[in-house]
Amino acid sequence: MWTVLIVASIALASAEPVTFHGDKVFRAVPQNDEHVELIKSLASYTKLDFWLPDSELLLEVGKAADFRAEYDVAYDIQALFVQNNLPYEIMIDDLQVAMESQLNNNIRSGHSYEKYNELETIYAWSANIAAQNPGLVSRSQIGTSFEGRPIYLLKVGKPGANKNAVFIDCGFHAREWVSPAFCQWFVKEAVNSYGSDAQFTNLLDNLDFYVLPVLNVDGYKYSWTSDRMWRKTRSVNQNTFCTGTDPNRNFAANWGTNGATSSPCSEVYCGTIPESESETRALGDFIRSNLSSIKAYLTVHSYSQMLLFPYSYKHAPAKDYDELMSLAEGAVNALSSLYGTVYTYGPGGKTIYLSSGGSDDWAYDTGIKYSFTFELRDTGKYGFVLPESEIKETCEETMLAVKYISNHVLNNA
Image (cartoon, rainbow, N blue to C red; front, side, top):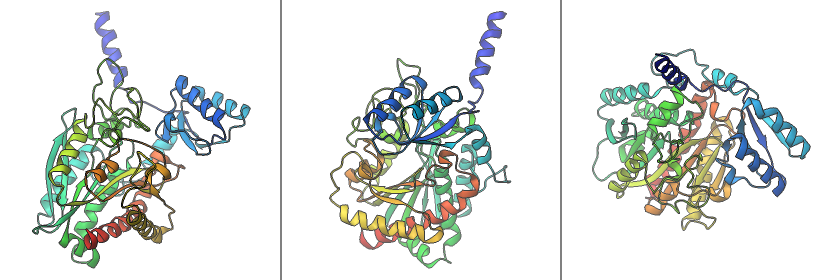
């Protein structure tokens, strides 16, 4: 009897969502190698959760590092930083409070483009918008996740022969909730603008858009039910209690080198082989099967307000560097024209940090010239807990950049 009760209580405890009361998000700027080593040593024994860069492996002198520290070590970390003259600020004083404030849209039930929607709500929305707009939108399943969930893809555009395509994916990293919000917004704008917005109508008449609202469906679900700060997939790793792989380190783009690790417990674990994950393999298979028509690949992440292009796994410039740089500049100027949001742009390795196994580099090396990564709002005030009140502006400005790139693809691919 007691054994049954104990097991039941353990199961109940493990099912309780993770809470973040008193956890703080720091921004530290290491001034020298000693500061870098100090943060790395803290990470090794306090389990710091790195937000930007993705891991302590990517720390650099002079570059800001954002990370979450649990409440019971936060004040010790502050004291250490003061003692070692390491400049820092507290971006979020209590993460639990920030998370609760994030959901500030009064509409809580059903689907809304101005709130964060749970996975099942997104599934239902994708079915409905395809059913209601059969001449413009269709839905297909391109794969199944590790835990058995469908991975749905929407094809948006007027039917036509020999059309080139733009592929847009969202929801690579589970906790980046504003990313799936953008993919939903894009489809809404396509449906609502066709026939009234001349530029968008022209794009939809002459290009197809493949829109993948959530790639990492298991991780996204888990970020709603169990751990809001979950990043990786939910695949089981052998011989360890650590779960999941970073899907954006899981592609055959200098796989397993810069900015990635073979340690399953790391947030930048690259997996056992390229496309070891059901989700990344589904994405890769679809793009390979449609490579002749897909001329642009846009992957949407958050945060840091950047527009990046290859390469991220090395500093050497891509062969199309000049065109990609010019296109990124134009797209960022279009984006900034609406609300004045400042974006940085350039090759990933130089603009943000070196990282290998990314989908944008893989797509480019596979033959898709116009390959870009969006890092949406903001620059750290809210980070991964961007309030719902900022979804509309974030999506509206990003639409301008996506349409700018798409127009270039239409005229140049």
